[in-house]
Length: 411
Image 1: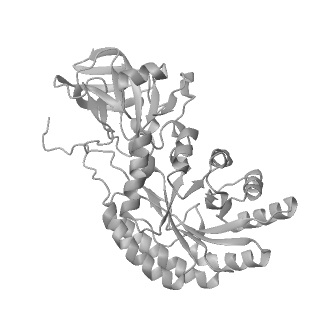
Image 2: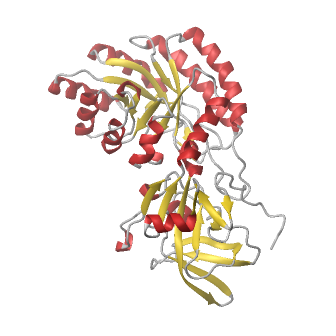
Image 3: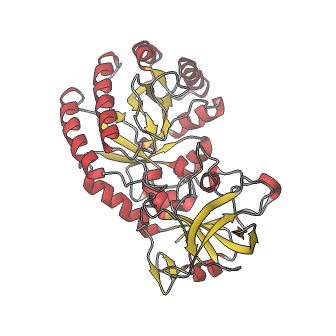
């Protein structure tokens, strides 16, 4: 094995005692008994709290932090996040229902997405949620819904900027995109909002996601603030809310390094000070999902068989890509790479072996680990996949091959 090859960043969210991974203060084997089955996802309440507090320390004091619920919409997680963040950003009426069950003030909830159905628009209008407009057609649909139900809508314009978030895992701005309204079309849309008499709130600029390069995020944030200031000259009323997106990534793969958030925060403080001169009434918002919850979650599956095939050892687990598509490499990876993994009831054990970990599905795509060096595991041991708090269960094909569902717990 090449000792100079890149390695996973050492996961620091979870501790271990007596070879047992701890979730909160609960040993993994005990938690599995409490849950009553494998596979399951477990999210650490204290880790969520600490992540938000650490972020606030790094960011400007007057910056508002919103949670993008699409990262993890588990109701218990969202309830907990409501006590930590300043607002929610939604991607569906289903998420809106979960958000409205929390104490989060409705004026701090917004709804984005390129294909909102008329029923979803009317639900958001009735609830008082801010709608991020993504097309001229959607704007007219909102106006029709307002007329039909007799209520006015709070709206913001989602802008597709000419620039992109460099080095991001997923680019959601720049070039031709289904997201938002091209920046050159925004002045006309703002005039139409004024003519329709809708309650204009401000702008939403989301350029990309999963970025570990502080320089790239800083550049995108500065450009977003400058663009908003420029387009505000055409707005029908002063900018009240300016969401400059997120894009903060977490380390998943060998060689990944954590994002330098202090560097991002220092640069953002300077940029916001300049923006205040032209947009004095604007509440400046960053919208984060993965960064807030991703490292606070694990996926736990049990070894149900062990075999050797032509010199390679395979651990066969009771969970797989149907619960954790991203860890299998089938959620956007071009070249498959391993997530950080542990044998959760043999932490620190020095009897190691190289194994492949696969799920129970009848497809060669169902791979959780490819030739990883791990403590020697046997049938009944627990495989733990780190960095699983975001885009896990709800981003996976849970009905594929009619396997049993996974459970989720907040500890």
